[in-house]
Image 1 (spheres, rainbow, N blue to C red):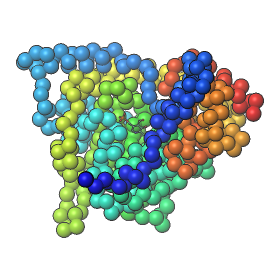
Image 2 (cartoon, rainbow, N blue to C red):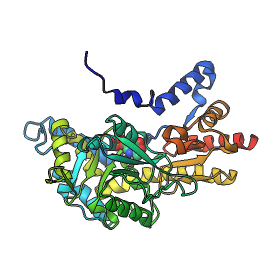
Image 3 (tube, protein in one colour):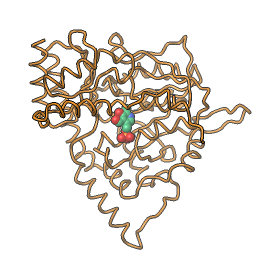
Image 4 (cartoon, helix red, strand yellow):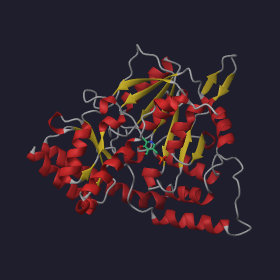
Length: 404
Ligand SMILES: Cc1ncc(COP(=O)(O)O)c(C=O)c1O
């Protein structure tokens, strides 16, 4: 009998959203008349359709696949077509960051790269993850048996964790704008993490999946906008939330050419080369039509059309924030992020608030405890829903909280 990787037994038995789905199904089973009244503001999936010019580009790419002369098989490099890497580099340039096309790899989304990148690091590294966090960072490291330590994101630091110089880490996960807390690092806060990483000879894995939601000037769109980042950071990004690609699957990872490891035999190797070796063995690239659509996202028309959806979500976030302001409830996020992270009323625990909200208001959110110990007592709402439903949900939340 094969032996199990027993590290899997250390993982939470059920993924957070499966637990939530179970609770909703149970509620509907007992209250079938409420089924259509439930408003879901829990899972972080988008709801608006993909921009028309992006859809056209995907169709054109698919048509080319049906013609002998333009048919594409395996992509030679497996790193993404040049036309898309050039479009990504142009996008970075639009917010003042210079990235060479050979530093970009096209992926099937940020989740895979955030989880898979750990393959290239030894299992004896110490991994530092901010708490609360997107569960993928913790899970993918526990699967390899790595030691995970946490940096606390709390109400006191505005849910933007700060580095502790007395603690050593080799690999640091940062996510800004953050899922779940909606908090986003200002340049000076990110610089503190870069300085810490350089002092520790560590690498930062920077998840920028929500960069398109940034509105404030002193919040960088990329870690590479901050001095020193090219010496210590890998940036992982996604078109899922920027352009509604959750069902299309496309993202990109940037590894600066100067980022290097020293192997135990003293050999110096480029991180991009080792990651390329891993990907070459385990990943065969993103489909051609999807890459055509992704390139269209970065065109002038694509940016204009995607902005319409982003503005829609941002207005939903504003509506949620306004309700919480009226209720005097503390929250972070909503400004540079589609997420609003609120303190549960009356000191309630996050799963208790989840139950209350589901049962009394028929509104579903995500309990903060599912994202780490510092998430207990907090709750995540997303702005990815329908406008009218968001307004209705907030009216119900207001009524419920006022009645407590
Ligand atoms: C912080 C963060 N990173 C990555 C992802 C996954 O992105 P993708 O759809 O590109 O895999 C998500 C999805 O919710 C996320 O919240």
